[in-house]
Length: 405
Image (cartoon, rainbow, N blue to C red; front, side, top):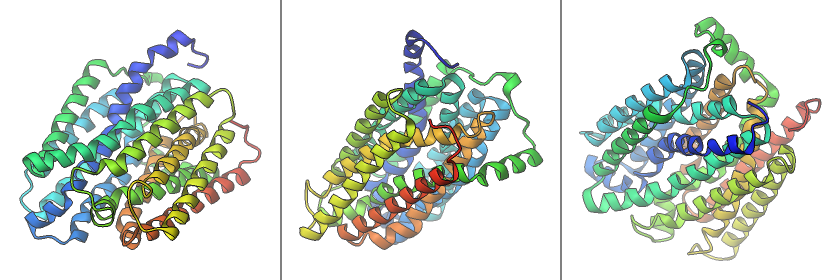
């Protein structure tokens, strides 16, 4: 639906809020229980590293299933798949709330991860179903803007729920949140993929399609750029209990010190991305984003070399970095999806798979290596950003003949 009028674009604001709520299921599942990790370890007699692996148990199947959510929605329609996935996520969250051992919690976290990514993957495909060009970038930015509230609200709300009612209340909240989003989608989510546009769902076709997408150099370079850019800040998110409680000496209800600046950065970057849509090219937008991220990562490293960790200077660079990342991300994502206009759902699945697999590796391997001090976290951020920039430069090299966004 290219060239929509401004009134038509205005009508998609409600859709943006709905897609943002769908996308927020994932961040709530990651962030809300972070303040409860020490208590979960004490409850089940588990080590901090084992409790931290409940994140990996969530992220690994999350990454695997993102390969299927979009493809299934390409075959069966966006609305039906979204509603089924949300219902299964609700049941898995109830299982987490009732967990009787660390092993049972790990099992239900796996089930959460298998279903939580559907909204994010299908939401991206819906954006491209209904809009093209600058309007698609604006809608993607609106989704990012509304979605930005989740990472800040989740750990703060989770911290207070933990203090008031205990760690199980956090997962009860996820049950209620998922139920509310399911009702909203059941009442208002339209089916945006016409039957004549749907793709066959068979193993041979899917293996061939996945092989074609995941072997496409430009697509993979853009997906790696998104992955490394985000992983540079994700290591702070998964290290939040260590970074905030042990290094900055805040309590379970003080996680806003990290997630507040991060959210403000997402809001600022998404707003800038929306304002730049149609005014400068997508590649120029990405370059501006990288300029901001490089300045933030460099400043963060310098601050940690010159002075010990403390508030507020240890979290200010996070705001700047996330603003740059949020400015670049919508353009990078749309550039990748537009490489496969007939299979946007499947392409969105592949893009999400690459990013979430990267997040799982960052959680299981990178974060435990760098969370020992604020300086090593800053070094990790710089290395991951350098890898993201390298991936974007590779994209520019292999896609020189492609038209500019």
